[in-house]
Length: 79
Image (cartoon, rainbow, N blue to C red):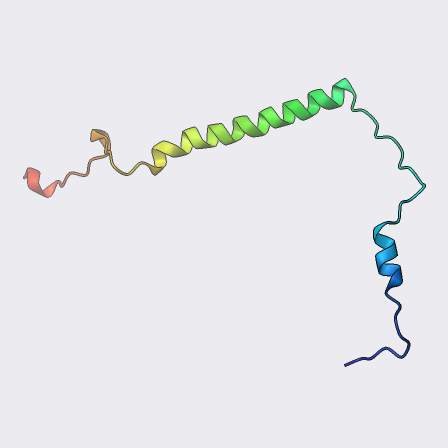
């Protein structure tokens, strides 16, 4: 394995935990009304798509009921 040649002082690790920066980040800009409306419309579109897929997918996944129009009949028994 690779070994370090110089000893590493661990005082800087303990010191870095309590270090506070004197540089304040810039204030966050507020979203405009059009941005908020766009986010809401996008959320509603995604939600409506998921609900629609669920509503259309549930009958296809139902295996317990068979409708009479899809019942298989043998034509050989009719002769």
